[in-house]
Amino acid sequence: MQILIGQRSAKRPLAFMVTICFLASCVSYEPSILIPEITLSAEDISFYEENYTNLTVDFGIDVAINESDSLLNVEQLPGVRVRSIVANGAADSAGIQIGDIILAIDNLETNTPDTILAIQKIDYTGSYEFRVRRNTTVFSVTLDGRQITTPDSAKELYRIDPIATRASYKTELADINDQKRIATARVIEIFPDSPLLSAGLKANDRIIEINGHELNSAQDLVSRVNTDFTLGEELTLTVYDGQAVTNRRVKLWEPRRNISSINFGPLLQYDSSFNLSSKSVSVFDFWLFAVYRYSQTGNERSHNILELFSITSDYGDLVEIQE
Image (tube, rainbow, N blue to C red):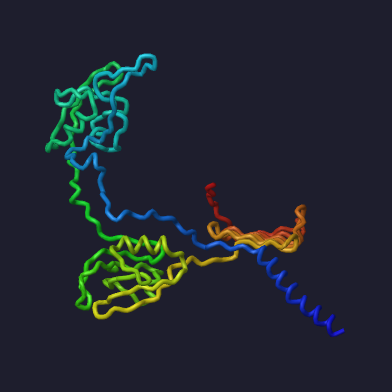
């Protein structure tokens, strides 16, 4: 008899664990805030396309060779065809349209796109006379060239990590504790809800290492945090605050998760969407009817009993759903 009691009591924890696992499989979670994806920048970046770095004049057009429209006899015709126009650009303001053929600029024939680029490299931003063909009409139009801003005017401010640490950084060399000069990531700005705040970091602190690995730039910090770690994971930052070097434990930002669905047969069904702020609950749902059904979308709430009695309160908002 004692053996039977022992076997029976041993089965109870097993049955309890099976029940818990079954219930857990019926519950799903999702973050209340969707996590956006970011594209990491390269270590060295250029703000201008290489083909346009030497240009000084902007016509606001993109051109291609002028090929005939006949598929049976394709040949290159005089001039270049306007393929696209920048809105409110120089060509747009002068009345040039997509499909126009530019025959010459200041009496210089323009039979290849390279001729247009050569003119744009000349340091002159006055008026240009364009000879243009539209269908079978040739006309002249004056276009005021616009000066292209030189690449030196675009200066990098900092590198930003908008998700994991929610802060911005800048690469700086520093002499720390009379040691050799090393590269650090200086904290420029800490944004709200940044995990750096709870770790005691502040602006102008210099981050030297992540988990004992030395950094070589601010972009190295941003890249490592977003590729080597997951959101919510803890890491150790070696920080120099201008007086001492300390290690700070930082838990990366993690979105709050909430129950989005509970499905337990016909007994209980619960669904929630945080993006549209909607919820629905049904009790004893037998497909054709439910004993009780509740739904909430925005500020509108609805109660339904046995599919016979329906009560709606508050008001609803029109919401556009994009699929």
